[in-house]
Image (cartoon, rainbow, N blue to C red; front, side):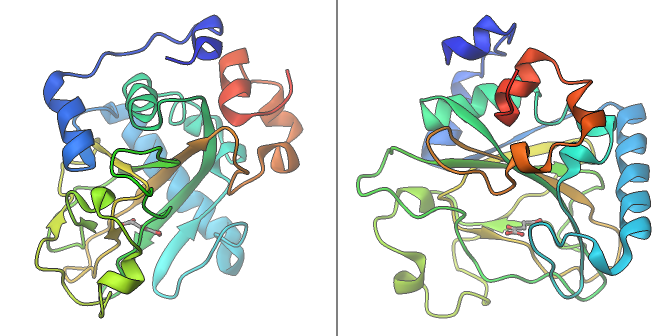
Length: 253
Ligand SMILES: O=C(O)CCC(=O)C(=O)O
């Protein structure tokens, strides 16, 4: 574990052998009941309120997508998000995959509207030259609603983080279903954690039921962040951050 995290009071939450093995072999795990019922309703409320107040600008700090309610820079949009990027099992899993110091890459929101949401199968970072790493990004999907086949639970291809080569050279039609894909289904309150080199994507929401999620991604410390927290940090966020939070966000003490 990163000694700088421990110095700032981080208490790792050991993963089970099965979780470590699934992260290594499949490239993902789903943690259940991470979000308490009260926190879940606050996160849902914050998601909708931010989207309504930002309107056409929602998500613009990172990316907007037709047919998807996107949000970005959630670190600075409410203290309700503070515990997301500090969740102990999540940080323990991130270190397990990256095996070196890391920081927040970005914290965004994503909710595919009815009949929308299908993305090309992609990885957040390319495959390493050798299976087994080093890896560079770990992402997580915080399920604010039940993730079902009907409402477009994200898809991924287990073990694809171990494939040498680029997805664009290996998959001809990246919008089509992949023969080996599985869906990251789970109850609201679950968190899927996956290797950023795993092929995955958002999927079409056929039922139209809400499928709100937070994308909380981490990156090895030597790389730039997707959302530069030093640039975006608001005074009201800065004043409530613990030393541990400052380290994860990579903002000065
Ligand atoms: O929300 C999801 O299902 C995953 C979305 C995703 O991979 C992306 O926006 O790049």
